[in-house]
Length: 247
Image 1 (tube, one colour):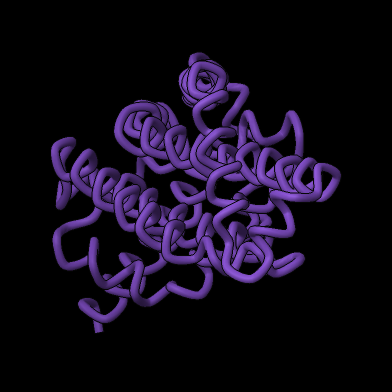
Image 2: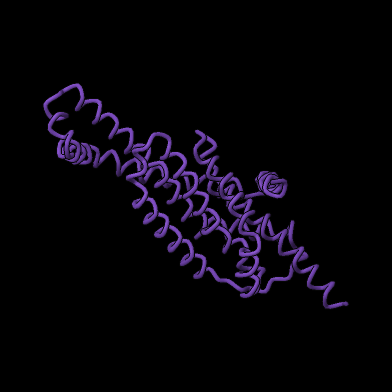
């Protein structure tokens, strides 16, 4: 837990460097604007579809259709569900933008000052970063859709959202954090060795994504935390490697 918190403190310290703060904000702002516009434009159609689904429910659909009050309550819950569902979708869009664009740019600034002693072995690439971000997002969306029936259980939606977002964070950002400095073997071995710690970093980022205002910074701040966590781990691994070679 200490290493996870240090990673976030280091990420927060990095915000003082020129250009970092802008990359921290624009992915979430752009994602929020895109999905808010789409939601507003399609709101009437979505509510209409929801009404049809509710009245078509087995056993209770007919009763809901005949009771105006019950139908209004059911529709209200459906609308709240739409807004709640939009939040992880906005986050996943922002996470894609961070992983594919913002984080590689921030990595250059952070690595030049904090990790200049680590040799660059270029095991990854920008194309690999985009591909990793895209596949991570697609897998996240599949898991999100499969989990939707469980969201009807009170409290389950928040728990599922936290777990899936934590998974997305570590899946999307670990590649970018290491792609310039790790070789191909390290790019695979280091995340596997630190899987529990990386999930912890992702989980803290997922929790921040559910806090108003802080959620604007959560994807990029989480990405920066992965940079600090993994490059620190890479430094230790390289030092251990050198000690073994000397012996």
